[in-house]
Image (cartoon, rainbow, N blue to C red; front, side):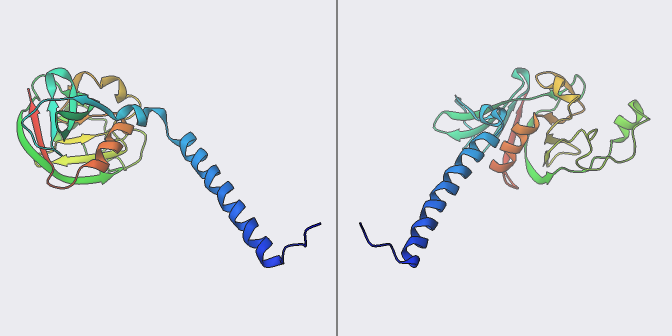
Length: 187
C-alpha cells in the first residue's frame, strides 16, 4: 500500500483537476452561448475590389455590405438600403460608434410619422437603431442594427438613407471598424 500523500500535494492535485474541469466547462458553455446567427454573419467570400483592407463597401443594388479583408476576400453581410429618393453614393468614413444609441427622428421622418416621440431611448424595443450604430461623415446617416419589426426590411430598400443590418451582424462589424474606417457606397 502506498503511503498517503501529504495534504499539500493532494490539494495541489485537486486544484489542478478542478482547473481542468472548470476550463472544459467554460469552453462548452461559451460554445453553447454563441448564437448560430453570429457564426453565420462571418461569411467570407471572394471579392475583387480596388478598396484597401479594412474598407466598408456597400453595393446598394445587391443589398450587400462587404468588409474588405484584402487578397480578394471580404466578409459579406446582407443589408437594407435607402429607399427610392433617399439613395446616395460616394465615399465617406466612420465618424462615430455607439452601443444601443438613443434615436431622434429627423424632421422628414417626423413629418411622415408625427406620432413618433422626439427621442427613443437606447435599448428600447422600438428604437430603430438596434444594438449598435456606426455613424458616417454624412448628415444623419448610419450603419445600424434593427428592431424586430424592421428585420423584414433587410434585403430591401426602405430606409431614409441609413444602412440596416441584423443586430448580430452590426455587432460583428462594429468590432472590426474604427473611427476613420473608409466607406464606399456604390449605387
